[in-house]
Amino acid sequence: MTFVAQPLVIIVGGPAGTGKTTTARLLAEHYDCPFLEGDDFHPQANLEKMARGEPLTDDDRWDWLKTVSEHASQVAQDVKNPSHICIASCSMLKKVYRDYIKSCADGLRLRFVFLHTSIEKLAARVAARQGHFMKLDMVQLQYDIMEVPGDAELLVNGGDALAVEMSDMTPAEVESYIVGRLSLN
Image (cartoon, rainbow, N blue to C red):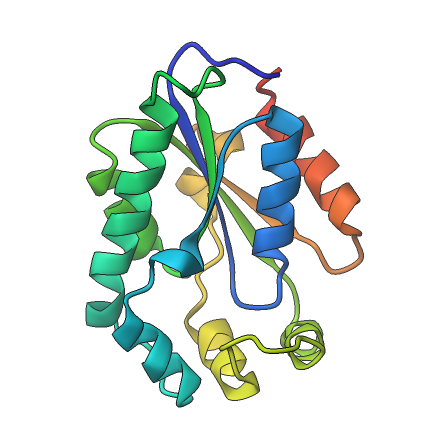
């Protein structure tokens, strides 16, 4: 088990089809810590809207982002969580969303892992899914608004984000790459 002195939330994000949930679960297994699926915190109205193929607006997202941030923060600080780490998945497509998540985390330490790849690979991955609410046209919309962390946002520049171009990587390789860059243990 990995232990950190200061509670930490790691949010795995990116557009649909990047493997956020798979990657987040692998990281939670590696660090032996809780995992929260961000999609589970969407209000019913958001799920219905996406199922109809309607894109979410910023106004649709704020409460959801706040809920994910607050729940993950609570789990990381829970005395029953000896690792003091919580992994959550959440698209966090724009810098303003990541900044908002930080503002809702009440000063807790955060790391943002942003997965990205080409629109062609995303579309192929989403098309192969069974029973998921995300439709192909929504993938293009997410791709179009995606803001991959760069410059001052990046860990290597003193920020709190790691951008992972995961096109030719297996889930295990993505996990290994992230663990090596986060250097928690």
